[in-house]
Amino acid sequence: MENTERKIVIDFETSRRITSLRFLLAVFVVFIHNNFTVESIAESVALGGAEILFNQNAFGRWVQLFISSGIARCAVPLFFLFAAYLQARKNDSYGVLIKKKAKSLVLPYFLWVVIYGFYSAGVKLIVLKFAPQFVQHPENTALNWTLLDWVHKIFGYSAEKGAGELPGFVYQFWFIRDLVILTLISPVINFFMKKFPRGFFLFVSILFIAPVNVYFVQTQALFFYTAGLYWGTFDFPLFEKIDKIRWGEASVLFLMSFFSEWTFCDGTGKSAMYWCAVLCACVLFLKLSAVIVHSEKAFSILSYLSAFSFWLYAIHTPVLNEMLKRIWLKFFPMKNPFFCLAEYFGVTLLTVAIGTALGILLKKICPKFFALLTGGRG
Image (tube, rainbow, N blue to C red; front, top):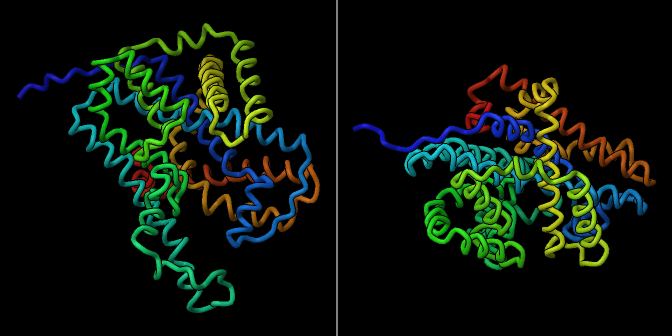
């Protein structure tokens, strides 16, 4: 039977601009997760973690807020936006789409869950058997976890918050979890998007800004994924429109919303002002892609590294980054503001460099295994 499926060509310039951003977005994710704060340390200690010396000043706090809680927060939203846009433009049948996502998302998800699950649960049981003196909270092991505990560890869902929780074994993979779910229900989203284009986008926007807990996915995932489907389906010239926004305008809007959130709001990342800052950060980064693609050298480097963006996203935590933190703090404790910032930038850059180097090495030595772990990317 002749295949009558409509295939859509992805614009060359748009493809280059998306490619130019992939690795930088993964680097932003590392900055988000290597971010000591007074609150995070106190929370860790309350859960049985070790006390950490942290003597930060106001300047250092604002630097970390600006990056990890400000500009870097565009990373995951843009990953959702790009994934949905490419899905819409490729226009695969639902069966083909699910088959592709099983390979590119579901298989890597469970492979990394097994790897990090063994590290988190299996290693503890082994050490408990042979050297129990080194184990904290020996009463809490995988052997006495309930079914709900396993669901939380693998998928991150809880009865109270639904998708608002993060997978215990590999918490950054909430993005993969939500992307799989959104892909599965994409025919429903497409139906409402085409039937009520303005009304449905307004509805999703209200859920996002409010925000309302929709339980099965995070609201930011639903909003940016839906926006990506609109972009790809209706062929909206997003980059062309973004380029018309002046750098000064986008920067001022970002700074106003960012400082309003962390000065006048509660600073929990839940207010409308916070999401305004995220949207402005997305605009700034989308504009940056034009600068990158106009430099062939910069684009060539980032195009090569884009093949390792998923790998860096997966490998950077919880093992690599946590290990580097412990080693770093053993030699350079955060006893003053300088050492606090040194840890913030030093450990992050080491995580990116070592994580990427491991990916390049694995791809050369065992390309098939690298392909399995990254869903065939690169």
